[in-house]
Image (cartoon, rainbow, N blue to C red; front, side, top):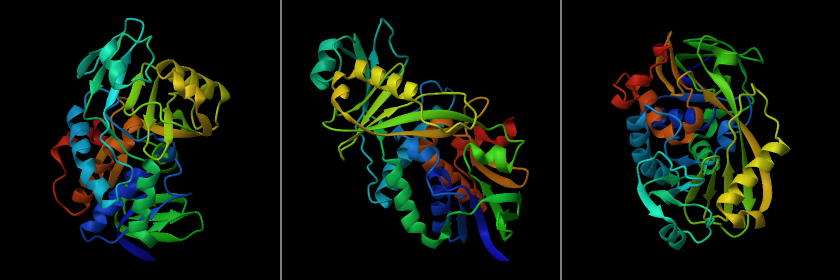
Length: 333
């Protein structure tokens, strides 16, 4: 039987980042994924590095992780990281409840001429950033090499051993649960993780803005590569991973209202990811019944990957994790 210091179950951005940081501490780690690494929620993510305004109570965690992103991105060859800032638009008399600089309509249109003149103004969040999650996954896989194993479906596990669908077993000092929305369904049914469906669109053509543009029902993320990502729906639809024409139409309508030139872009991909939600929409990071858990990141998985990885690597090495993760122990439920 093979043996490692740690087995990470799940090859999304969270699992891969945890494995990378653990490897940097000298640990012998293997990552197991039932499919292609990053093919779950990560591949559908837009990579916005800003706290979800609907998820309260973890500002310190989000800010610390955002501070860690530039260094991680540099390690990964850039990975499309850019501190481009974002603007949350105000429509229909509704001012976004965010801390930032208020821009009246004229000032806003001077900064972003492509924004709809229907908006009353917007809130500028100059420190917001974005990264390309797919490039992050590719870079992490390249660095981890043979430590990432695809087509490795875990069917049974204990805190020190996993069994794969082919009957083989792998032993480890620690097992890290990082399988996103599938963590509870397949691995640890007592963990309060549920799937929340999210659909995103990828467009090609002239960039409609230079910053991330947000409105009440949509965000638009321009990339220097010429890709524009539009997201995202929030659907309590179980494990349904099908693309919906209705969701595509709704996203395009909302994005076009914010940025009319979106109507001229070419739709090249619609994708669905299952975000791992929890009862309070906060992540699960830490010890739980002998396992290490890195799951439940809901809409902030990419944002919270660096601090989650630091925490898991520290715990694997027997040292203290960052203090910002303390409120997010899996034992709080």
